[in-house]
Image (cartoon, rainbow, N blue to C red; front, side, top):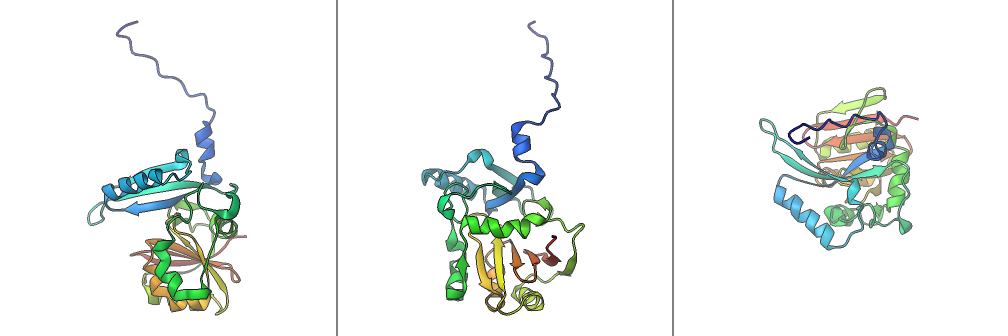
Length: 235
């Protein structure tokens, strides 16, 4: 009747399709773009749409991380990457947004020369499945270290700090895969000595990244302004 408040629909107890799709164990949120300027995020989204990228926008979320005290507000665009999702044909970035901005690491690739290998989406997912995806996550850009073998925590967050850890946990010729916090920047594979030689460029290219040592099965997380954590990859 007019003027009567409508009764709220009672929950059925069954998870919605979107809840199942984005459940914690189904995958992880990978950062496509992050900025402290809201207009830059809007411009980035407009550019993606204008370029006609076949991104599944239902799997994209926009977060505003409100700053407290001296921490500035951050605007983040993230894309959900399923753990067992099929890679697009040819390993390209069209469907997922992966690898759309290799220019962000152009300096590192130029310095590394032939020692640097840019990974396709399929290669990125294959390496992630045996490293990153074996850890739980606190949020889209931070791993959960509970229940895993933490080897070292360091409050250093510069090139020298990374160089020391690379030399401590990796052999010179060991292949190291670098996953960036921004999913639009392609992952790269480098020999450990190349990572050590260009450590400043690695940490200077991102706010956060993860380095997987393929022989020793060690993963190092870098958080800008906080430091490094090295841990053994769970079986």
